[in-house]
Amino acid sequence: MLCRKCGKQNEDYLEFCKYCAAELTGDPDDLGNDFAVEDADSDGTAPAWGFVRSPKWSKPKLRADDLDEEEVRTFARRRFEAPTRKEQEATHDDVKLSEAYTESTDDYDDDDGDDDVKIAIPHMTRSKTSDTRPMFKANVIQEDEASDEKPEKIKFADPIEDDYFYEGVDPEDDDDYSDYNKVRSFSKKWIVIAAVAAALVIAIVAGWIVVGSTYGSFANFVDYSFNGNPLMRPVDIAKSTDTNGESIVIFTVYAKKGSTVRFTINGQIQDKVIESGNSFAGYLKESNFLPTTPVEGEGPYVTVTPEISIITPDGKETKITSFVTTDDSIIDILFPESSAAERRRGVEIAGIPVKVPELTLTITAPTDGAEVMSKLVNVTGTVSTNTATVYIEGQQVDVDDTGAFSGIVELAAKGESEIVVEAHKDGYVIARQEITVNYNVNDMSVVFDEGTSLRTKTDTITLTGKLEPGAVIKMSCDKQGISFAGPVTVGADGRFSITATISEVGFYDVTMEITSGSDTSTATVHLERAPEDYRDYYASAFALDYTRLVNDPNHDAHYAITGRVVEIIQAEPYIIAKFVTSDGKEMYFQYHNSYSGAAEIAVSNTQQYKLAAIPNGLYEGTQIPYLYVWFVLKPAS
Image (cartoon, rainbow, N blue to C red; front, side, top):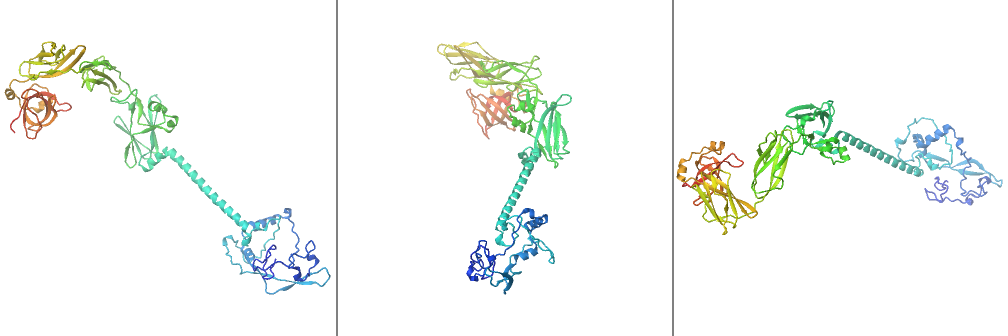
């Protein structure tokens, strides 16, 4: 409907002009009711607005069958393709009234037969400059300006709302299509995001598959790529047999192409270069890994670590210290409790389980847990081969042709002591047996009378003291040169007297076995027969021969030696000290200073001591001479 005030076109349902706000409601009286019958509505009344009669166009045929193929293509093009520049210019021109009115030649007859009424109808023209909206060239189809092509006529097949046929002209008509664009844009965005996410997932899965097949695990990948490990994954070990039925060990080494795998077998080196791919597989006979020395472990299998190293192309050598295996025959020996999942992934191992022959070792006496009455214990037993070497508490003993052996062990203290016996042979597992014995010695106090000397310069010495009444004392010594009258019974007053005969100058460790009722105990007494005159002894002494003392530490001779005491090793019950001679030679000496007139020994940087001594072996655990001292003089400093 046209506004009578501004001439702008408005929708039929508006009551006020949307451009100038003038009232659009018409009154038939304003036009003098000069309307023909044909101008009335279908019910015979005047037009609702009485201003301009709606054109009486023929109704279109709204049937799809009435459209031909060319019309369908034309409709589709104008509906879905961007308008041409010429179409946009024609559509975007504003409509305005011309300044003058012209009279229409259309005649309208009324019903009363009066003269025809002339109606003034404004002519409308389009302004080609009134459209100020920007033109987007991307939406324009370039056409020749001189083209005479006329837009094709559109026939509507079905009664569809006008807003559906959006041609991008009027911003007020594109609301529905704008929502459609938003939905379509939103959908495209999510399609792109989904595509990117899918591509990322595919890349991650593919990368994971590549890492798994090449490195075995992500941890191996990191270790190889960033921590400098020359191995892409741990060296794999498996067992098999060759065509001759001999047992072989298969190694698969994963390292960079050009790296060298170095095997060291019994001192011989074999190098294998990885020439293709990133791995090398080879095998060696299991016999190459059999040990050539006694082997620690529990048989029959021992774990032998093969000597394998990787040399990278830049020359850096790395020793391989751990391996992995999925071979059940190896896992069942080393880790039989491994689960199925652990076996599939591979179990880490330190080396190859190799079957090694074993020795059979048996201790016949004493029995484990036995009680012994002496600190000297005779250990006997047998070994399965007479070519084995047997050690009792670290000391080698003889083995006869039948494999029997025996040896004496001196127990360190009263109570329980452990005795260890081992049998060694090259290429065999070390056989080891341990027993515990109880040195059952009841403490029995032996009290010698005051003034009783344990040192004599004659051929006899008498010991007097006090013990439990009725006890029997038996004296014995393993060393020649001393003897005793026989067992002595302690009197009712608890006193005893024992005389020993010492035929030679020397020192003697005498065992006193004391029996009282059913109890027996022992005690050790150190007795000495010293030279009669120290002056004669010094005068007849040899000059120090240090080389002889080292090479023949128990030869028969006595020496006079001058020097300083630099360390007191033991002070009770006798002295053990470290001594440095005046010419700088080191030695140790033992001195029993329990007799009357014994010298005082002290460490000093200035005090010189003159020793009269005899060889007594080498000091324990060293190659330094050990002397037994008879006399000690203190020359003036």
